[in-house]
Amino acid sequence: MKILIIVPVLIIHYACASSASYIQPRGTVTYMEDGFHIEKQISGLHIYCYKGKMKYLFHIWQTVLMNLDVDGESYGQYDGKSAAEVAQKYEELRTSWSLNLFNTKKKEIKLNPFQQTCIGIETSHVYRITLKSIGIDFWKVTLLILGIIVFLFAKKLSYDPIFYYICGITLGVTTSLLILIYLISKLLPKGKTMYLLAAGGWTVSLYLGQLIWENAQMIAVQYREYVIWYIIITSLISFVVCYRFGPVTNKRTKTIIQWFLQASSFVMIYCSSHFDEAAVGICILLVIGYNFPHSFVRKGKSYWKAKFPQRRKLLTEDEYHEEGMRETEHALSNLREYCSSPECNQWKTVLRLNDPIRFANFMEGNSHLADNEVLQYETETTYSQEECEYTDDEDYLQLTD
Image 1 (cartoon, one colour):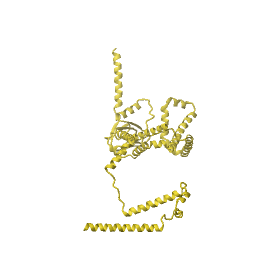
Image 2 (cartoon, rainbow, N blue to C red; image 1 turned 180 degrees about the vertical axis):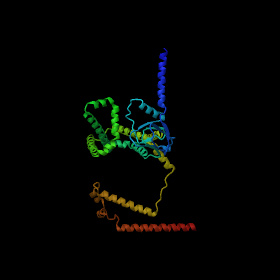
Image 3 (spheres, one colour; image 1 turned 30 degrees about the horizontal axis):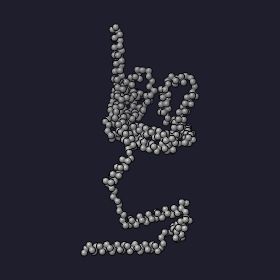
Image 4 (cartoon, rainbow, N blue to C red; image 1 turned 90 degrees about the vertical axis):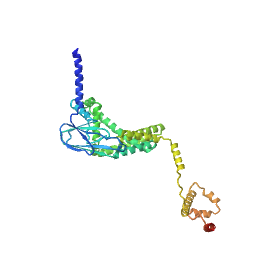
């Protein structure tokens, strides 16, 4: 009976000791700050931690970059939120048969400026680590602006045929690449290689996909001509298919496309900052502003104009005459265009006129006034000005008397 009690206790004690050994950091820990720079050559695990800072609104687009430069390629890299988590991952890989297929090695690591992040480095080569903080990340600001624009213009984009063709061509090129990979997998011999891939399952497939993605730039450079021709041919085929079926006409389908674009814009806005609360707040304000009743806006504008009316700018006498001449010439040119257009029946218009020759001269570009009319207008204008001056002088004399 005592043996039955002692054995479970020993098992629990061994498990606790094992977990304690995982939590205890194995290597030394160095805390980094902005402007940190170090060059070392230490065999074994060494952990570098960034503590993070307080969240302030003017740090919304801040990014912390950690650059790692290793002389050799044989090194281990482990990340976590604490030094204990990094040490635990390191111990798990050392004491088990697990194959870490997804332990990606990045030379430039973007850290969350508001959270503690630890990076473990294990190598026997010389390596250099630098840490710098970027106050305003240009790409984050661009992503935020792009997300806001996509959200505001989602409805117009869902009704735009050009956007339909662009999305169709992009989807066609991507889908054709997946189909090409599937066909290549069918052509592979069903031997030991296929059995190995089947045994590995989706993890091996993801690992291969990760390798292809990491080497995509090298593939695009070395086989540039093939990549360009592949994109051109698949784009033409995708355009023909989209042209055959035509743009979307169903209203509900367009509404679904609009919702999808707006959801994508929320993802872009959320990913534009490590300040999660501020990003979510921007999304909420965007939704409230987009769905705010327009009647309230119109009432607010009318109330503002009633309380603070704009001052009307009075014209001087010279400005009044210049504007009159300009508007008269504009109206006369519009009249000539209308009389020359098919909408006007010239013969009926000529029959209604007292002087058709004068109308014909006007249509040829001559003045619409006769000489006697111009003379009569100038005489009346001069007389009225003199009369106004005489009246003003008389009023002045009466006031002085």
